[in-house]
Image (cartoon, rainbow, N blue to C red; front, side, top):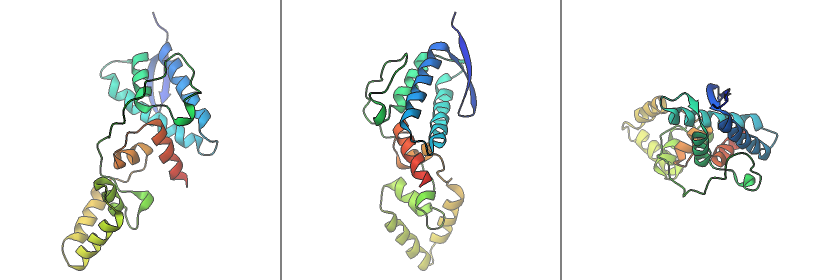
Length: 189
């Protein structure tokens, strides 16, 4: 019989067995130790929301998060560079995985926008220069084609990338712990 713990991660409630709780607490503590004091709560909130999403994905009808799910999530998120030597806990260090490109999603980029962030979001989605996309939209507007209406429709349809995980999806990079920290810190600047 194993002891279970009821915890709130990313605003959601989960039941973890004792081993999973200890491993996750150790991971979060070591992650928190490497994040600067300014903005620590934002980075930790982003990380916890990503962990909660991954837990929901991996539970699939089960009720209790076990050590294997926690190990899987930690290996998927990875350890940030500053923690490579600072990891402790009841789980082993995950083996380095080859970088897998995540599928890109179309979002508006609020960090690099002129009007609504549509052009910068499209440039990140298609991996082209944002100036080229902006010039194409201006030419389409001047020529009287549907460029204006396409821009308006994309502005309405495409959501803004607000969280660090969405910013990772927009760029087609995995939402690892290091990337979440990087985009959470860039949001504060």
